[in-house]
Length: 361
Image (cartoon, rainbow, N blue to C red; front, side, top):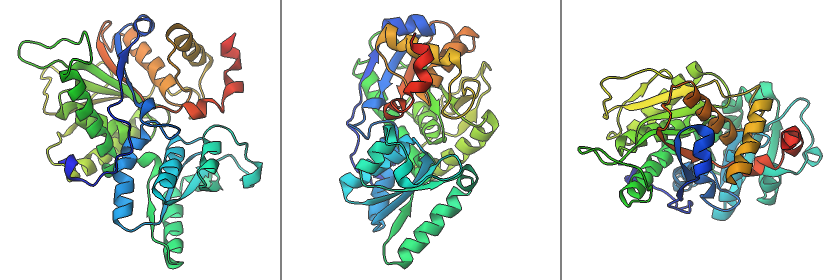
């Protein structure tokens, strides 16, 4: 069972589940929000759940240095840097930036980068071409550090491997308890089944959260299916990636159900609860990773103004927009009961003020 894996308590759990009726009107469904933007303080977001398992493994292996990677405004890198500082570990972050690679002192100290520096992380900037070889680069750094006498541990992009994804299996166990305690008012069950959501929805950038949510939602009967809204790459890429991570996760916990990929809007007459149904939707990713189109920007601003819920332009804003479009197309039924996982990312929002200026009028 996942509970048998070593785990460091980093998350302020359970994170709340709340509902804002104005959001129901915007999306066209009944939306409950799992506030995983409140998993901690400055380190908050979905990555902290993965780090509970990954950093426990690093410490168990005697690591003194943790190496990981991400985009320049990576939420995962920021959460890793702050969590490492908390635990007395050194963090080395390989951050993707546009060529040419800037000197450290030339990088603007905004958003996640500012928090990385405050946490004392070592920042290593690499080009997009180098980033494609990030696994080899981080492994080379690990060997060099160990040759110099310091044990090092590599965490993949987004903390997305089988061990890290157990964090979201456990998050779904947490949601099940909240449902059973009546903390999702209005969620009804049938005569032969405990209350559950129709859909769990969230953003997908590296696949680990998607794997954990899909497996956990099925294992603990949280929802009929999971929708992961890709913010980069395409559906084929993520189906392959999530399948690999899910297989790794099931290696740690054989009680987890097998994963079943489902096309958006497809019917499954069998509706077999013993399989983890996952829909990957790649139509909300916008122009590029970290960029929104104008309609998405206006949507993000509308949600904030009508509901007070702040989403970010890299992950949650795109996912909520994608959810609304899926309801509009009829792929998710109007009035469906949806649990939306707010995965955080708000420090990165503060680095994109100028990009959003036009949507604020």
